[in-house]
Length: 119
Image (tube, rainbow, N blue to C red; front, top):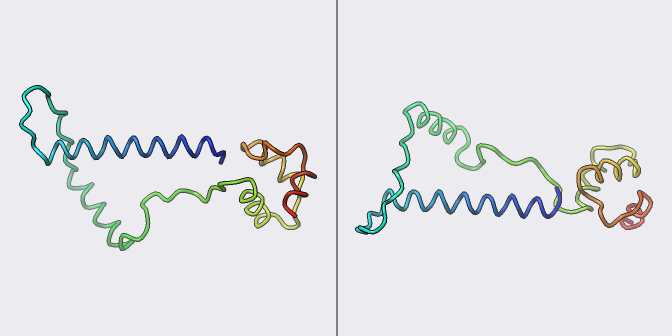
């Protein structure tokens, strides 16, 4: 995944985390401020949702995320290594074309230059 997209995703997660934390701070830490009206309290989860959370926690022992992210390469060479694992024998032209389409290899002009950089 391109570096810019990863940065946008990280920023989005950070902003969502900030909003989530702020909402729960308002719910559980009461401030006596007459000049600001607080956000409405977050809705409580229905019993079915709570049961699902308990079931997932029991099955996973809290070690895994509920929705794990796919193994996304962080750099051009990570992409090459991942492609190399899935393709035997290594096809540099196909790797370059597919990677270019996925947003990688912006600094390489051909599959030959990518191959030279790898070795």
